[in-house]
Length: 165
Image 1 (cartoon, one colour):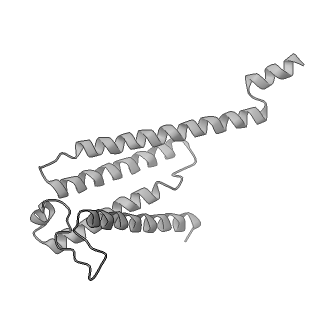
Image 2 (cartoon, rainbow, N blue to C red; image 1 turned 135 degrees about the horizontal axis):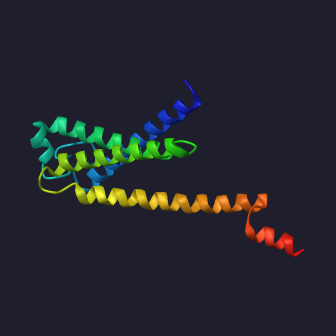
Image 3 (cartoon, rainbow, N blue to C red; image 1 turned 60 degrees about the vertical axis):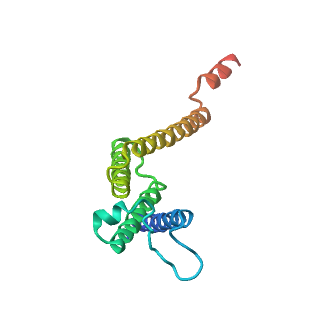
C-alpha cells in the first residue's frame, strides 16, 4: 500500500471517529445519550422520530445515524489532505468532495427532518463554508507566491531597487 493511500485511510478513519464523537455530543446535549451508566440510545435519533418512522425501526435509525456521521466525518478528514498539486485535477477533486459533502448533508437533513425542514439552508451554509475556506486558501497562496517571486527577483519593487542603484 502506498503512503498516499495510507494517509487517506488514516484521515478517513480519524475523521469518521470524530464524526461519531460529534454525534455522541449532540446526543448528550439533546439528552438522548448519557455517559453515566449503561449507554442508552432510546430516542437517540435527536429529532422528532422522523428517521425512526421512515426506516421502521429505532435500531436501524440509530445505525443509519452513526453511518451518516461517520461518512460526514470521513469527508471532513479527507479534506485535510491535499487533493492534488494543481490544475484540473485539483478542481475536479475539490468539486467531487463538495458534491459528496452536499449530498450527505441533504440526505442527513432529509432523513432527520423529512418534510419538516428543507435541506437547502444547511446546504447553503456548507457552500458558504467552502467559499470561506477556498478564499482563505487563495489568500495564503497569493502571499506565498509573492514571497517566492520576491526571492527570485521577479517583483517590480526589487527590480526598481536594483535599477535605482
